[in-house]
Amino acid sequence: MSLNNLYAVPVDGAQFTTYCGGNLGGDNETCAEVAPIPGVADAFVVRDNKVDSVGHELRLTGVELDNLALGWAKDRGLTA
Image (cartoon, rainbow, N blue to C red; front, side, top):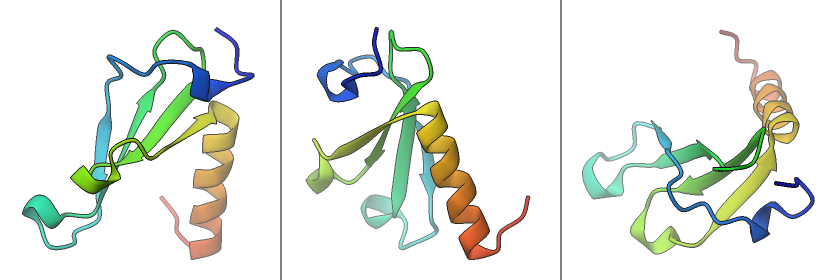
């Protein structure tokens, strides 16, 4: 599969990992979910897990997602 138009690729069957932010818990918890896009090498889908956010997602190549994560961590002064 090509990286030219990640939004044209179905994400059915994607295995999401959930990262929560410690908000209110339960249905109001602030979480983001990330999964590799099935059938595409080094491409990912990022979404909000709340019901009213269904259908709103961001799709990134591995390089784009890495740059986002590293840039965010740097700007926030975070270290591992």
